[in-house]
Amino acid sequence: MLFETVWDSVHDGWATASRAYTRAMAEAGIDVRLTSWMEVQYPLHDAVQAQVGHLQVTEEWAAKYRAARASSGAVYIFSTAFGGEEQMIEPLRRLRDLSMPPRMLYTMFERSNVSESLAKRLNALDGVWVPSNANRGALEAAGCHNATWIPYPYFDDDPHLQIPLLRELKTFYWIGRWEPRKAPDNLIRAFLRAFKPGESKLVLKLGPHKWSMIQGCFFEEPESVINGELMQDAVAENGWNTSNVYSDIELLKGTHSPQEMVELHARCDIYISASRGEGIDLPAHAAKLAGRRLVTTNSGGPIDFIGEGDILVSSTGSIPAPEYAWLWGPDGQYNDYELEALVKAMQRARESGQPKRLPPRFRSSLVGALLKEWIEKRCPQ
Image (cartoon, rainbow, N blue to C red; front, side, top):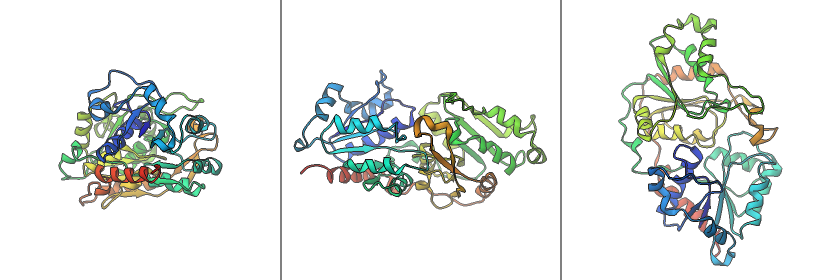
């Protein structure tokens, strides 16, 4: 089986997910080979090499495989983000023209709406696999009949499983790129309204890549958000000012090693997301592996991880997402919610109780078995 996806970056979320699914397939006994439609950056990080380096093939090998007849047993899975109508022209052409059946697609998306015409075009494929139940539901609602949810796997050697369970519930934390879709600015706003100085802490780990000016869409930096919020009456009345705010709000920037990220999960208590749309939300997944309480808006992917002791902030509907028109098209939308609901969720999250780690259905052995069954049903006998 040939899996064509972006896989080589140690920090990129898409690549991380692709490697995890590849490992699960290999462990399940699938003869999987890995290639990328983007130029692979060498040398590979040691962790990437150890995970899947032995499974990569040359483009020459991949081209011959894609052209193989169905009767040879060749299976091709292409992977890319599920963009808008124009953005999906080339990926769907690639699946149609560069390979023989069976043709499958692994994809994900963060928007809340999918066009019916695009969703129905997926029915021409032999199968579509998505990493969240929310993605599957959105595709089915739009008319796609062959979408399957395959949970994002964890592995028994994951270091987050070794993190001791909580003793207290005080420190909130979030990990991700500082961008409009993830709405981390709302975490600052909610935190300063939910608590007074000294009552709690908020740690924000920002990714190394800043949000760029795309189609003139500006996104305010965290320090600017904090300064603006200190001028709001509700925040000032809680006792926040320039002399105490950074005692309880910590901004972490730049690239952290995998070990440093594990240590971040270990020293924090409550993972919180204010996102408007997520395909998976890998930091939330890692937090649940560590047994941390999860507080999340109804953003899609993280809903799969919610369990006992976690809190879901309900959506109030969808709003336009012009910042992502370049990827989703001009009609893309993502979920909205009330800031006050996020405030109350943060306050509730401080209550006692022991959250649970992820259930076994996310274990790699079970996910690998699901993938094997899904692939074999679509393979020629």
